[in-house]
Amino acid sequence: MKILILLALVAATQAVSFIDLVREEWSIFKLHYSKKYDNNVEDGFRMKIYMDNKHKIYEHNKLYEQGLVSFKMEMNHFGDLLHHEFIRMMNGYRRDLNLSRVSGENKGSFFMVPHNVTVPDVVDWRQSGAVTPVKNQGQCGSCWAFSTTGSLEGQHFRKTGKLVSLSEQNLVDCSKKFGNNGCAGGLMDNAFSYIKANDGIDTEISYPYEAKDDKCRYNPAASGATDTGFIDIPEADEEKLKIAVATVGPVSVAIDASHESFQFYSSGVYHEKRCSTVQLDHGVLVVGYGTENGKDYWLVKNSWGLTWGEAGYIKMARNMSNNCGIASDASYPLV
Image 1 (cartoon, rainbow, N blue to C red):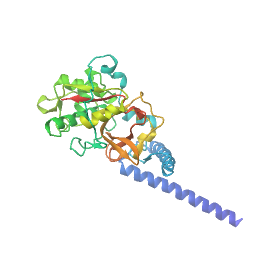
Image 2: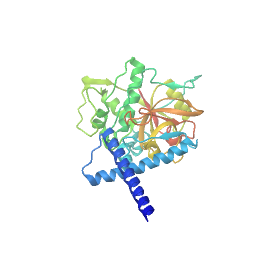
Image 3: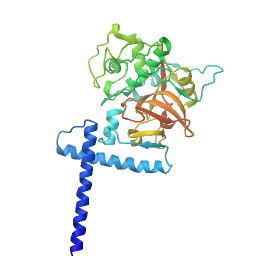
Image 4: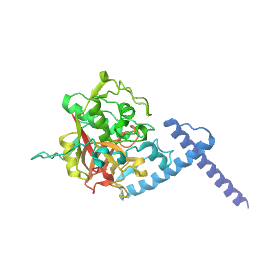
């Protein structure tokens, strides 16, 4: 009888210790990412989501350790979100708003491959100074705006030698007449069309980001760059995308980022078997390409801050049947 009581006490002590450990870990997460909730019920709900997400990450990384997948996952600032909350909040690319490819309005030109061109095996436009630091779109579906500015920043740099950070908020507030919906979504070609018609986009410092829809207040005197149109790269053609990235510079692309594996991506070459090549929901920027451990990849700049991925970047599978639609909707501005 004494043995049974002792075992029960040990089990109870271990259970309490585990609960205390979970709560301590949860407290550290909240402190690290400055998370605050309205009440204890919400706090408990979010802690349960956090623990569920942590378990999914653990199970995935076991596969990584066994060599069965090519990338790792890691807890980040999205850890307290249900997956559908994450998608609704962060993924704002809306292919149905694409006036240029669907209806022929605001139509861009098509990419022509240069004659007798040989491209290098590795490209990284960061090394040339053509890429601004990683930005953070916050809780606003404005990924399309960050993809747009990133591509134009690169083209403006190549033309002028000056790297100017451009205003995503300018696009969020002012490009609705061109088919975009601010924090509710948009796409890059529509934004390029707005910039051309507007004859400019303000600098980020003059029109800072707010992560919310606001009144348009474009100031021509603060314009940092403009474009004269845009080029669409042939759909789903990774080879032409490679040539464009190598010869032109950073390219705006749309991808399927609707999977938890993308939400918690940490490092390695991201290949998601469940990815669609047509159901695209997130705008990002290809700034290069290369090969890691025998796996070809696209070097992609995201807009979710430095704590996501590889300091804000992700290596996405290249030459894997257009995985996640990386080459399905690719374009860049003319300057």
